[in-house]
Amino acid sequence: MPEQYKLVFTEPFAKDLERLDPVVRGQALRVLATMETEPDGELLRGELKGLRSRRVRRGWRIVFRVDGQRVVLLLIGTHEVYERIRRRRR
Image (cartoon, rainbow, N blue to C red; front, side, top):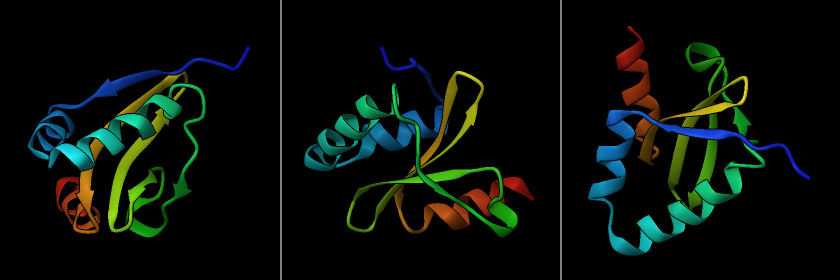
């Protein structure tokens, strides 16, 4: 049986998800369901080292980090999420 991970929704992530267009939200929820067993994603570099990004659809990303058996969901949005994360880390 595949390993199970707990998805942890940060407040900014939950707000972003709530504001999404219903079609994009549905696609994001399907991606999140797969992340409970496979929290893989693109390893980010530079200022964002330690974080990962997962594609929801063209131009839309989920930014997260894996902390043991927890997947901490930070933000979801278009490519601007990378700049939002950079600003929060300063």
